[in-house]
Length: 210
Image (cartoon, rainbow, N blue to C red; front, side, top):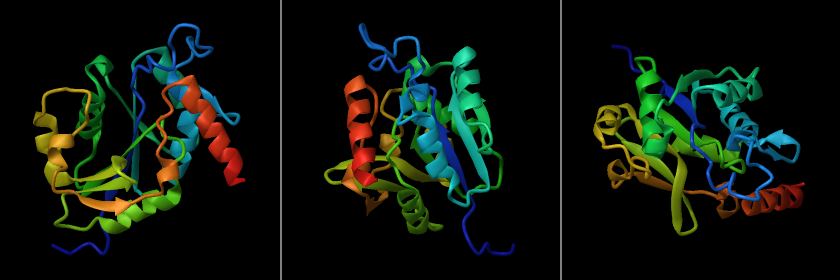
């Protein structure tokens, strides 16, 4: 078999979460799916997706909820070259979206990069650094933002089957990441926009970067 000159990775965006904290009582976003909440005039998910598409991944996938929310997310990502997989049970938590993604991946991949739709400040530079740190024999690579480890992360194909075997939970594939390679990522990019207050923080951060 001819050895590949570079690994073949899929770029995955997880966008099937229920977003309950963003749509809490008295929130102006109660009727808006969280990935579609506007940040500086652009849907949250579009910020995350554009950073992901600026890499050279040959296959890109977004995990979405069923129904109208999923269709609206697809419309928001028009033109970015994503395939889509539906998570039929997003209420089971984040791991269920990881598993829905893995089930939808084509054969022949060396691994996949998982990122979250509600982390709009993750840069293309961070995505590229993750990919540069991954190589055959490394099972996973994750970002460390200061004292916190969080997505995006690379999961090697050898972990796909163990990931699918995990019981659904709201903590992602943490059990599989104990031996992961860690890279240092900009702490300012670590912002999970899951509340109206976090949205304001993201807007402030973007303003300061201009």
